[in-house]
Amino acid sequence: MDAKGQTEELLEDHAGTCSRWGQRAICSVAAQNQWAIWTIDISIAFLRGKTFQDIAEKIGMNVRSTQVALPYDSNTLVKQCEGFENFDEITETLDMVKPGLGTNDAPWAWQMELDDAHGLAV
Image 1 (cartoon, rainbow, N blue to C red):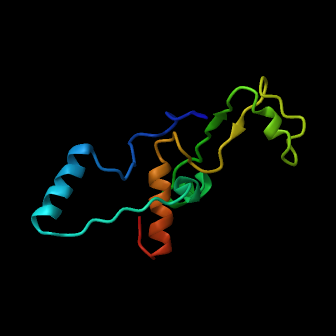
Image 2: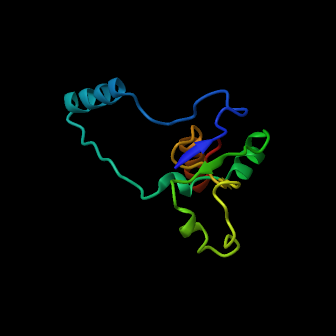
């Protein structure tokens, strides 16, 4: 899956991830202080984040439009969904509702969802 339309009004990367050097620094400090380190993996985490509409309303920007180019011959799966029986991958694309994998603002949307769940401000 390939997300298109990434440059529209996106001025910065909102990824809440750490560089390899940052990870090493954290591990080094934790080892020096004998701290335990935990990690978790949340299944399809980025798809659990805010929608493009929610993000636009929250930060006062235009709603982004990002389309998905499907892998070859995946139209048979799409056509099984209600309302998409006549989908044509040659002339049509699918709009993303939420930032998913491959978009720069997916980590940011996920962080906004976590902050809202814990009552924190963005």
